[in-house]
Image 1 (cartoon, rainbow, N blue to C red):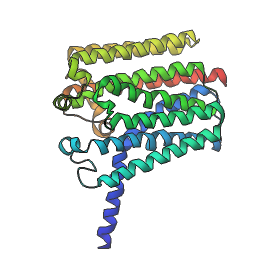
Image 2: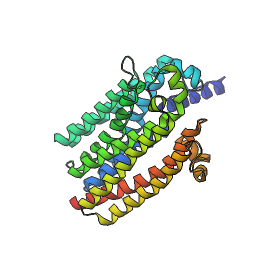
Image 3: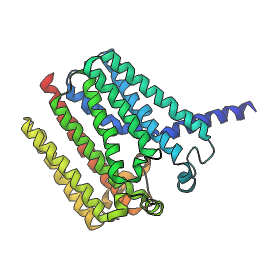
Image 4: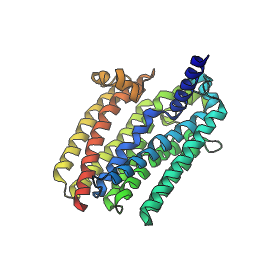
Amino acid sequence: MPVAARVGFVDKVRAHLELLDPVTWISVFPCLAGGVMASGVMQPTLHDYLLLLIIFLMFGPLGTGFSQSVNDYFDLELDRVNEPTRPIPSGRLTEKEALGNSIIVLLLALGFGLFLGLHIGGMRGIVIFVSIFSALVVAYLYSAPPFKLKTNIFFSAPAVGFSYGFVSFLSANALFGDIRPEALWLAGLNFFMAVALIILNDFKSAEGDKESGLKSLTVMIGAKNTFRVSFLIIDIVFAVLAYLSFTWGFIIPAAFVLLGLAFNLVLQVQLLNDPKGGISFMSGAVGGGFGNAIGKSDVQEHNAFLRFQVANNILFLINNLVVAGMVGSKYW
């Protein structure tokens, strides 16, 4: 009996962690890292490393975790059909326990935000607290009725871009110094990149969205046109990043951004020609352990997007961090 009780407790803890979806926590780190690098004033001290850890916990396990747990709570009936192995429909967590999970991470995220806001002080502290507060509000509105921003792509994609890309970048930039003008541009580009990727991510649930009346872009305009819209946004982001890099005096980084854009265009043409099987040479990149991290799907268009996502994210991440670091070097 003691052994059974111990196993039950461990399974319960695992279910709570699964509800917070740890795979998604890392998604905010590139924006946080870029924001910090663009400030140019973080010091290699225990104090600054602790602040960086706190803001990552605030936006990652707590902020992102809240968005995932509250989404599962309000999607229970849908998950009973589509994802019965999730913690709540599988019975590993009760609805009350799941609600408690959401409330705890919500309060912890607000507590961390309040601590950072008071510790940093001034306008920078206000920016940090308002950022996490607004991100949490948007996360709730994204899933909770009667708002359910997720039911319409014109609200859902900007909501994700705002929470994951924009405010996280600005908060990290304000953590160690005044918000740089360049940081506002980079935060905006991260917003639009997140919007473009969320549009493509909806491929995986297109059939379910159509049956339930959700207005994803794929449902409204079809797979190939969805690729076109998303690719246009992505290409504009790369082009603007190259232009800004050039005008800020970062000639070599601007050239590398253009190379990244050119490589993306090659991949995009292949996907437009074959939305289901395009860039199959990258199939190995989404297999195995890495595939478990970024996701898998039975929908061919979504698997094609996952292959593209690997290349695009690496290209944008490297270029974004390099440019952010160059911005920071101006203020160092």
